[in-house]
Length: 157
Figure 1 (cartoon, one colour):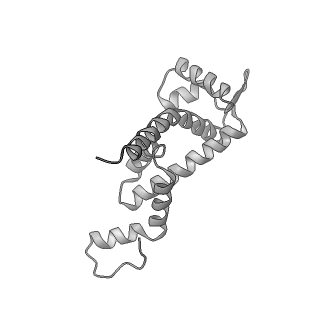
Figure 2: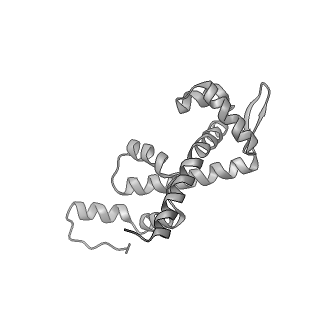
Figure 3: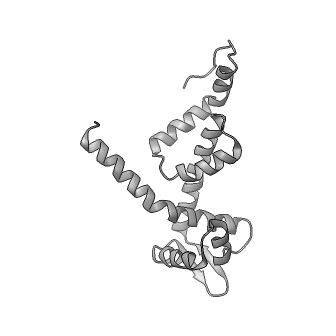
């Protein structure tokens, strides 16, 4: 069994990730809707997340209370500076995880779906290692290995 302190830290990090994953999903989606030039409306959020409008209303109250969004009557939902930062950080993690999965040969659709869940649970050290592997040419290395190409890889992992 692992050291108790290491094991409990792993469980603590997983609980924290579960706690923030839903908040990050909402904030990132609101940012996406606003970036498309559309208003982020409760009905659109419900449709995109596949949840009911009362569920969205409850979360929006929480996001407002946490200082991540502002709501204007008849105008939709907007991100605060803190909400914008959270959306950017979440999107950056998603991009790295998705690129890593694509480098492993995972289809684009599956990589996008899987990255949506994984992005919340990947720590900074692991994320940095994913990025180093991508930058070192992981996809090319795996392709050469899979095709049994005798040419040695040019980068190191």
